[in-house]
Each structure stands twice: as C-alpha cells, then as structure tokens.
Length: 132
Image (cartoon, rainbow, N blue to C red; front, side, top):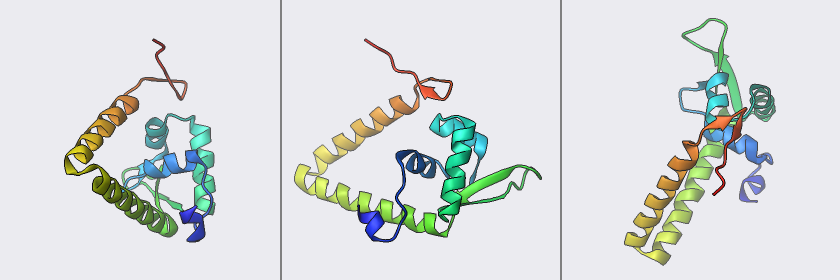
C-alpha cells in the first residue's frame, strides 16, 4: 500500500474511520462514538492505538477542565494530507476518463449515497440495515 511505503503505520479500517471523523479543532470521545457508531470502549482503544502511533493526540477541552479532546497529531496531519492528495489525483483520473459532466453526476450520486448511509439509525453502536 502506498501509505505504508511512505512510512505510515498499517491501519485497520476502524482506525481510518476514526481518523476521518476527527475535525481540525479536535473532538470529544463522545462525539467520535456518535460519529463512527462504535462502542465507547472500542473507540477509546482505537484512540489509544492511534496515539501510540503519533497519529492523534489528546489535549484538554477548553470548555471543560476534565474532558479531553482528540486531534490529529503531526503524523496524522501528514497522513490526512496524503490521503487528500491521492483522492484528488484519483478523481482527476476519473474525470479524464468520464468527462466533466459524468464526473459531476458520479460525485452527486456518491454524496447522496453517503448522506443516506450516514443518516441511518444506529442501535448499540451498530448500523441498522433494512431488509427489503
């Protein structure tokens, strides 16, 4: 994998999911739990893993003396920038193959799909799937 060749640690899909939910200003653990739909203990363990890899760091929440927030660490910021760069290059290749109009349609469809998946109700940290 390209990221591993660049010296980044091997990440499990759950690590990537957590990293993708971390905002620039940082997030509380409860916000991450809600965003990724995994149990609090699991998210805490994933954050511990990512912190040991220098991908994230914990820092005091300015609005609360006891609660910590999580933000991308130095390695995590570089990782995120590389992921964005690769995604942009991939989209550019697809746009060349599909053309601008089809690429806009593809993006609109993918965004619509993402909004329906993200909007699904969750039960006990798991996604609820309707069977039809």
